[in-house]
Length: 115
Image 1 (cartoon, rainbow, N blue to C red):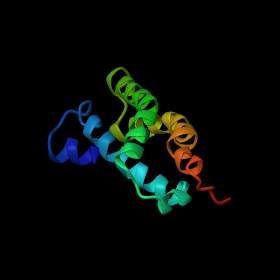
Image 2: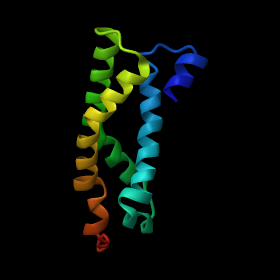
Image 3: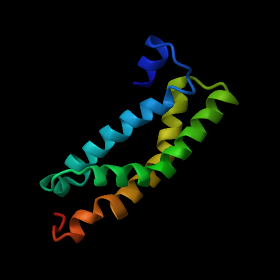
């Protein structure tokens, strides 16, 4: 998505990260529901759950953006390398928040996750 926005739509390498992050957040939420926390797929997805996911990942994604902007703006890194470094740095925070808050709701509602 990032490369499409930059190379095809002509958006700035900096500002294209915002819509590409929204797509990434939605795809990641869906993947977590169906694979990482597979027991959650038995419960109907909700806007509230998606919103919790967005809020929970805001810290990690904020860190992701700051690292990306610094690597691009200050150090002149290439897009994909800066994107990869920023994404790896934020992945742990995003996962921990999802496991402890977003998808935990389903288990506290009476559904026990499978091992």
